[in-house]
Length: 223
Image 1 (cartoon, rainbow, N blue to C red):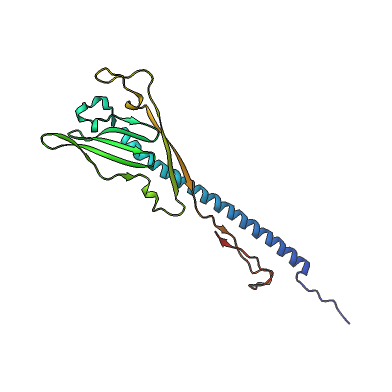
Image 2: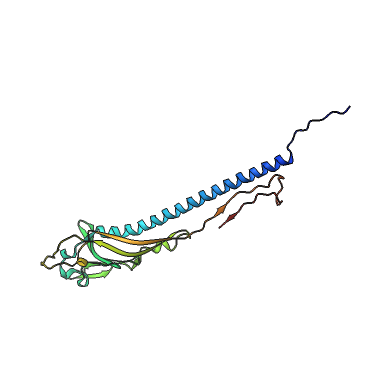
């Protein structure tokens, strides 16, 4: 007498359906991971760029916070007879820094290219004279040695706001806008960010659990 044996297992259709579902799930997870990775990297690059821009602006702010009005300085002590000057491409002004007992008068120039130059008033024992205080430096130089994802700061121009009304110096002469201290200084700059975006996925040997076969689920790590 013959009996029908019961066999447990999956049919071919069930295996194919399960494989298709698994493929869709893996691809969806890979796409989600890729989008998250790109968003994180883009946000990191943006934050890095703004951090560098804040450092550049902060260097100018430190000088500007110590600025003094040239009209309060005797003409004989001015650097080559120059007063402060504020234009779209260059700002030059005097600063007074140091301790209460040892202050130093300096003439500082900032260019919209990011360069900074400084002269210092010194006393030789008989006369006062101006001498260059260090070489001309670039506030953006530190960006050159950064990683390939660093931002490039491109200063465009300076903008100013002067107080309303007519201002006069100690002799009663009218002081022009470029010879006055502005209420505030604005810096217009452009940030250019370039970097690599990596596409990252996952891999599987497929239902047959053998590598390099047609049912493999391939992935990539490319940039």
